[in-house]
Image (cartoon, rainbow, N blue to C red):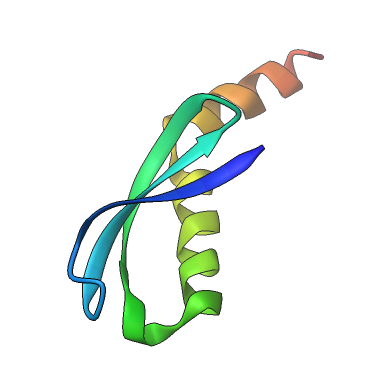
Length: 65
C-alpha cells in the first residue's frame, strides 16, 4: 500500500508530507496545496525516485532480485 501522509504545515499553503510503502517510510516532500492534487502526486513521485529507498530497490533489481 502507498500512503501519502500529512506531517505539518499550513493546509492553505505549504505542507510537508511523508510517503510510506507498506509500513516503511520512504521519504518526505513539501507541497504548496493551492497548486492542486495533481501537482502533489507529481512531487510525491519525484521524491520517491530521488530517495535512497529507490536507489536500494533499483540496485537490488540490477542484481537480479
